[in-house]
Picture (tube, rainbow, N blue to C red):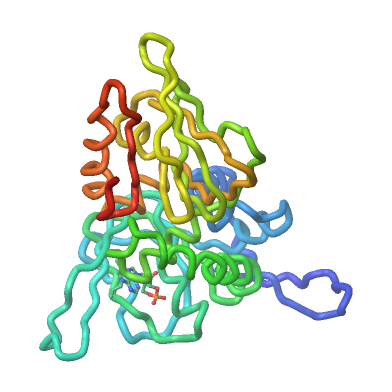
Length: 301
Ligand code: 1OR
């Protein structure tokens, strides 16, 4: 049952009905756990967060059930608490044959596009196991999540298109990556990652340059080819679960977009093979000469 409670007048005296779906403490805890790993919620202030939790509706779904039908009207945005789902797209000229384009597990989210752009549903989403989903209505989504999400996707769009590593991805996959990115800036000489530290973040260089410094077993420092805009680093520790193998040091002002390990695993799956291939170049460690590594896809110095 959905009840609405009136919101206190704002500075502009706009009257908005807040959606409040009563729920138990246990349900609230489960929502919190489900959204904790979802970056769309990370920037919310306490009141926005409380409003989102209030508005969410628990949706149990049976295996095989279709939650969203391509071409349909967008009503809800969904977060996956448990279970798995497949995403299918039917393109014109495909003989109406749906193609699987993505899948989701716990912590994943979908159904935002139709709400963001007032567009028909772009894909069909079907449960491949019994699921528990949390649904957020269109009005609350637009009131609380739309601005930030749209701004971030716009902000990173051009940059991500120019990152060689990500060029093989669908535009939609880059949008999901944009959702997960946070920008961080460093000053000359700052260490972004330190050799030997455990790694939990992945970085893309938005602007500036960084030195790659590796200290070998004899204590000798090796400087590798500096990294520039569009390069990535920090993937190795995430791919291998090993400590950082080199330090990355800002050369002048450096701005990076970074994402955590969970997002990395969830969103960069399609390019891990490319990254793994480049890893082999790090291993060619040429005694006297500096190891020169360019991590642009395709161009290795
Ligand atoms: P929606 O509101 O349009 C369907 O409802 C949802 O499926 C959509 O929001 C996205 O959240 C999700 N293209 C479009 N929508 C996708 C895609 C997708 N994948 C998941 N959704 N593509 C797959 C990219 C790997 C592009 C296919 C050409």
